[in-house]
Length: 69
Image (cartoon, rainbow, N blue to C red; front, side, top):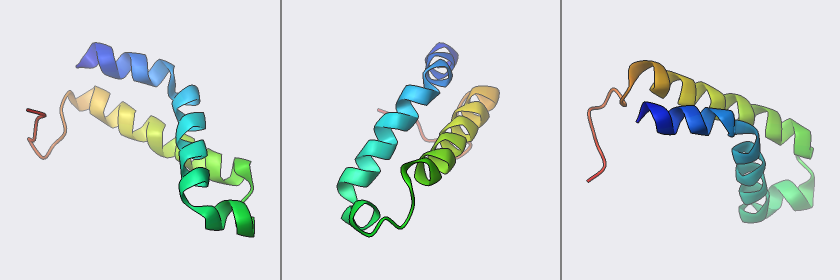
């Protein structure tokens, strides 16, 4: 699991770009209303992904004890 998380952390920028694009495609209000600029949306997406992956990497597994089947 640690190797996977390390690889995900290395690619957090490309993951951020993909997730930001998915949000913009899935939530038309962002794109149509221009509620946020691309960078205003991308920055918190990046921070949240990096934080999530870092916490998981430091602890090894999610704290809720659930594991994929």
